[in-house]
Amino acid sequence: MTELECQMICELQKDLSIVPHPYAVVAERLKISEEQLLTGMNAMVGRGIIRKVGAVLRHRRVGFAANALCVWKVPLERVVEIGEMFASLTTVTHCYERETCPAWSYNLYTMIHATSRVVCEHQIEAMSLLSGISQFKIFYSTKELKKTSMRYFE
Image (tube, rainbow, N blue to C red):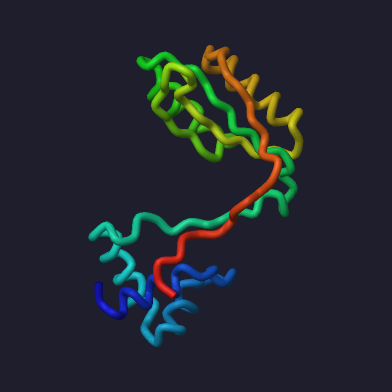
């Protein structure tokens, strides 16, 4: 990586300004053009250095008081189908498959944020009816421990 690429990543690790052109603000701090920044970012994406740029929603601050991790027992031949179905729902923020073991046969995990546990349970029941999957367990968050992104350069 070049020194400029390291500086770009260092700046991109910070919160983006909530303005019409947030990358122009980053570019200004780097003393380069917005076009140079975007070209550099695209080049790093192409080389696999940057995988994604994403937002962190502080869901509790905007009223989502219930956070449910729901684990599902899905037949292996339906994991992709059900996973894609669940992932397409606006109520699901995360959906992923995990390997099972003899003591734990749940293989599909979904995360749901809602205003209350009752709302979470209604959403999960609707998912069960939609998918035909009736074996699931719900785990609720009790405390938020981390809400920061990785820092690769300081």
